[in-house]
Amino acid sequence: MPVKFTTQRTLALLLSGKSRAAKKYAGKHVLVIQNRVIPLKDNKEEFWRDIKELKKKYGEMPVITFVPRTDISYIL
Image (cartoon, rainbow, N blue to C red; front, side, top):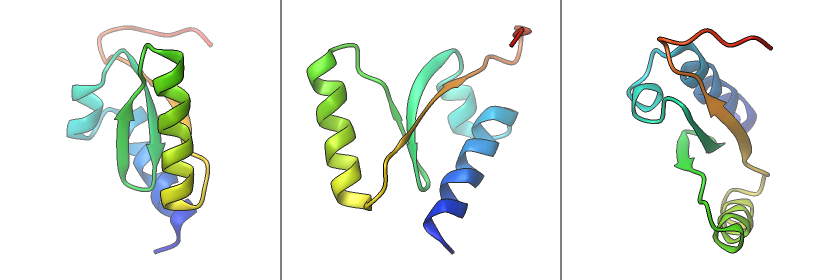
């Protein structure tokens, strides 16, 4: 399975609310790469360290996204 497809599939599951990770991280910002979901750190240095480590490990930039809560409507 190609890397991009895995990341897109994980994102789709998170945004649809149909995965355990969607319920776990609802209302939070996360990093998504392949089939991994990593919560965003509050500390700026830790955040950038996570980005660099993930990019080095997986060979692609992780996607930063907000996981919506199912009980709230969002206006975009």
